[in-house]
Length: 322
Image (cartoon, rainbow, N blue to C red; front, side, top):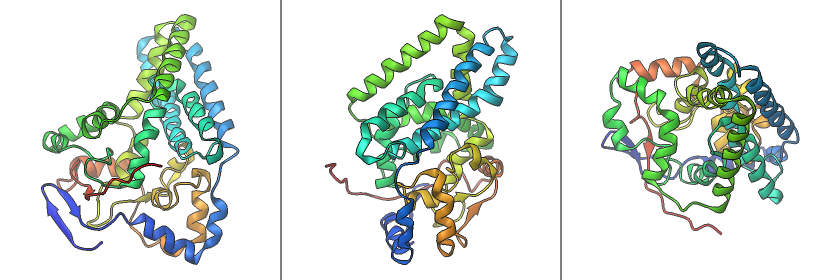
């Protein structure tokens, strides 16, 4: 990856992020990959079915004992909610309705957001652009833990706490690292979300609202699906900052495990990312990859050489938006 020079606990590099050059190299050899770009016509129907499933579940859990409510929040509802956050991830790349209908993608992301219980979609889009444009960028890529996180969460027990706190950290970290003005669409996202939460409370009571919110918190924290948060960019092998996972959990996470492919081609929907690997296997098969998100979490907690500091960082020049 060029001249790697450690600075502090992170791995600092003085080269550009690799995915732009990889994209050019792959397209030069396999131009047919361009045919995979564009909207996925099935995404809106899958997401709609998931949202409706959660609304029905809100009715079904309204009279459950609290212990069973939390169980089903973790084992079922939270899995759907986590999957919806990954649908929102795809929608943020305009693959639901295409780039020409960007505003429809924003509103559909707000719709997908409803069962999550807290406004998320529009704010995620705002920062996720930077994650792709400035991967590893100091002060720009808010996916990277702060220095405070590195210092605090440095033992196995503390790393477990850090994993559990992931939903909160993903909300607070952008506000500390790279705060941005609140947009009109974020206000719309918040208003619609609060109205939905109040409607669920009015229809079926507190337990139904807790089912949604608790599921989001639990399944975005210490949960097998959450292994993707660590697997994607934490440096398990020196010099490698993006990793793919090709296991069965991709079936319920919109293929987010195909993460090297996604960063190479962010405009390709998750449903078509396996095709990228099939077309250009010579660019992917020999790269380091994860075989289990549960193993990723285990190693993260118990290996001293891995922790919140295990990220590649670089200085990036800010590009003005059009």
